[in-house]
Length: 172
Image (cartoon, rainbow, N blue to C red; front, side):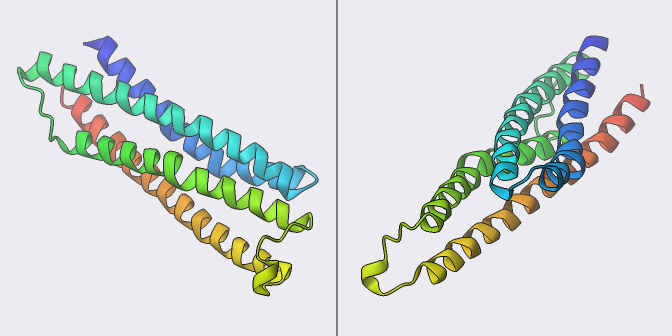
């Protein structure tokens, strides 16, 4: 049982610690240190993808170990325990961010770069490059807000799981 508890705690530490490090250390630092926002965005994009994969793996490890722990201790999986529901929500938010929002943000960044380098596919429609840049930037900013909200939601759900797990192990 100690191994299951260890793996559950390790999964939470890695996932939540990664989010905290990313949000409060890595992202602000690269935007302050690197010479261009494009370069900083490239670093943050790669780091966020790795964070998402770490989160997905950690969530699966936590969920699997927690279900086995319940089965061994209580003789049932307790699949709909609050901590399990929270982990599934965290996995869903992370997957949505990774497979829906992040790719669209990468596309918008690439489109912005092309427009800034003189390519305007809408020139025949009379839309200026400045208006197109503003439109693409606005779309990117909205997705960035949603990405940040999703990561914040994952963090708060994760902190909730830490509380639930501490209470759960404290009652042994």
